[in-house]
Image: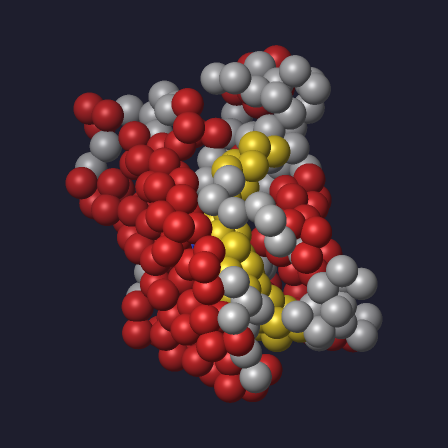
Length: 246
Ligand SMILES: NC(=O)c1ccc[n+]([C@@H]2O[C@H](COP(=O)([O-])OP(=O)(O)OC[C@H]3O[C@@H](n4cnc5c(N)ncnc54)[C@H](O)[C@@H]3O)[C@@H](O)[C@H]2O)c1
């Protein structure tokens, strides 16, 4: 019970890595607010976990909509008394080579992966400042660190996530708030399910441990950084990527 009675907000919690984190955090005793665009699957997953006795509530929200985010975070804090943990996990890809990438595809990815992280963090931080403690974990990607063919928009957004993480670690560290990033490698999820088999094989070949990551591998890193065991870790970007060097 490493998160007993902690109030955790997990964005993109309805599938993939976010769902694994929702389950893991709930099982560690947290009250989890699962935020996602996908209402049907989100509600269903929350109900399944509630039936098992876990405290999980689904909120339908688009993290790229500032007012909706603010309202949702305020509702969560009102119902639960505060917000202890924010996992900025929601993210999208819209891949194409530079010469084919539309301005709209670039903007859409930035809206969710960068603006969404900014809006959620700005909304949650006042509650953490008020209680003098909190944990914020942002989700970057190996694409943002090494670059990746076809991912100008995504790589830019995930590099921005590391920049925001390090800035907030400096701004908020003195207020008892730890801000860190997790940098996942290629991980089995709906995001990677769309990738052709041959490309997956090539991806696996690049990973020294010779497998893709599992959503639980990333959820474990979120859990560690959200726990008291990580109280002296601030401003780091923790790679959970099987040792890949792209
Ligand atoms: N899967 C990988 O290989 C991989 C690698 C590196 C980083 N990541 C990052 O990990 C995070 C989780 O990705 P995943 O692999 O679990 O993907 P996923 O597609 O399975 O899950 C992402 C979730 O975010 C939600 N979402 C998307 N846009 C949203 C919005 N505007 N508002 C609210 N929710 C929204 C989706 O509905 C979905 O449930 C993302 O930030 C992703 O960029 C994934």
